[in-house]
Length: 172
Image (cartoon, rainbow, N blue to C red; front, side, top):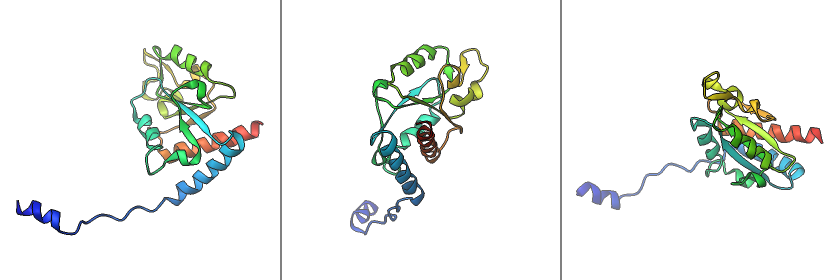
């Protein structure tokens, strides 16, 4: 009981708040510039889990946390492929998800981009050649960018999205 009361009375010990990561801030400024130039001030992303182990999804979800906060750069995640500019595919394309993945891609307005995130989405990963897996996203979708890693970090994903935007600008 004494220990509990002393915790209430004594001064709290907290760590210092982390300063913004300059690498992320600089990358974010470049992303914002590319989005403003090429995508009309916002980039809408639809994430499609085609049969993953959730490792890449966790890193993609980290993009929305307070540390990365990609919405300040103009990147949003949308629930409908009809509102998306970019389709991020995670996981190997399973036989059961092939039709759903194709329908998701077909529902997107043009111009549309496909990004394979993680080793499984790039080439099938550890599931390559198994009976229930067709392979990577490139087996049924026209993949514009592959971001390898198991899983790739949020910084690698942001760097890949910046590369995608720059390559989209060169096609114009």
